[in-house]
Image (cartoon, rainbow, N blue to C red; front, side):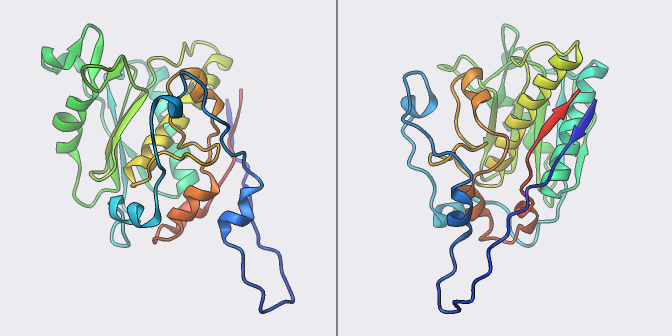
Length: 263
């Protein structure tokens, strides 16, 4: 399978009117992105009241600054056994490195059979316990962050059926599951699973850097209540979220790219 990552270059137009105020990057890019339509029953924003995130709130939430903007990001496989699963994770690492410009290191897999019984609800794993007791202790002080990746279904606690992923916006830890993304025994099936996994991993990765859900544009940071809703959102960051990121010293985030996978 060939991974194609065509670059989207955004350039500001030249003007001879020196006194004309320059448009913000959000204004320049906004027409390239769809705004969100009115939420429908069952969709994330219909069920959840979210107000968006201001620049001040983002600056308060983000754990990233100029001292660790070039640090390494770690992926922790959890209960990953088969070669096909390791291959998916390797492609996710390549994607994050290529798109965001960070070094990504994949750690050895942890066997879920070593976890205490209270980590399990039938076959599901408690993602909050994984974050608190497995992933956080492995976080190096100077790391950009660490994210667990697992083929096990996960849930954050009582009252939740499942989640695709979960992240702590201030502690640089997160987890993503591809348990509900389908089989990957054919090239076309693998392509679909990989697209879904990259989308969710990117979503949680951006949460780990301090960004909240996007409520303005069609964006990889849109919340989702179902796989169908998740499939509808794009794989790239919107201009409003990009505008927040551009305010801090994470220049590598300005490398916005589109994504396509060809079997």
